[in-house]
Length: 250
Ligand SMILES: Nc1ncnc2c1ncn2[C@@H]1O[C@H](COP(=O)(O)OP(=O)(O)O)[C@@H](O)[C@H]1O
Ligand SMILES: [Mg+2]
Image (cartoon, rainbow, N blue to C red; front, side, top):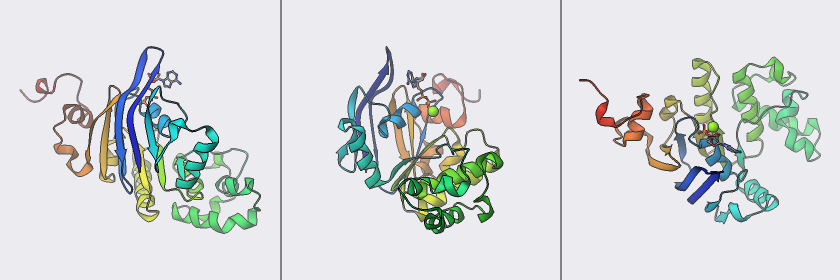
């Protein structure tokens, strides 16, 4: 469904992605891990066409999106409902309007969009009394749910989340992961979650690790704690850097 080959991007003389290869199959729930500043967000932005790579291809549904202009790219994204997740809410609009914004902008009335909004609000686990609330009346976790409901209005096939649980308390982190998982299963989508939260492994089907500009490992998440890739081994246990043989009990 997504095939990335030779993806290279530098800012000045700092290379962020370096001949990076990664494939994501339909129905996968892929967690991408890696240290802060490794380039996870830059990788994601190249996948969605927000950053143009210096070299390499990003094939989505058979089309190399790096060669398309914005309009053509939008078409591909619309077709596969490819959406950047948990976008910021508009403070001046209530929840109903925030979730229905795309359809309202296309000319539908609030009354017309409401049934679909109600369905999405319910599917993300919110009560209907949030509909007339404004973003500043919502908790962090509720805002994430509203953001997801808005995305679901577009019937996406691929859902991408960039650190969806950053800044949330541990209980909300768990609830948001469960929501991402539930959405993955119920909406039958392909999900890519960038996270440095190892808790996401419980829900992911696969894990890929970004290190020094490359995907140094990709494998099933169920094997991740037995993975002998040294970078993965260190990262998921939060071990300090250095050769793996130097770490352990003496
Ligand atoms: N638009 C940009 N211009 C210049 N440097 C950037 C830009 N975006 C990101 N970077 C740099 O690229 C590196 C990787 O950033 P990022 O992808 O945000 O890391 P991560 O998401 O893994 O924490 C960082 O050193 C960051 O400063
Ligand atoms: Mg990031």
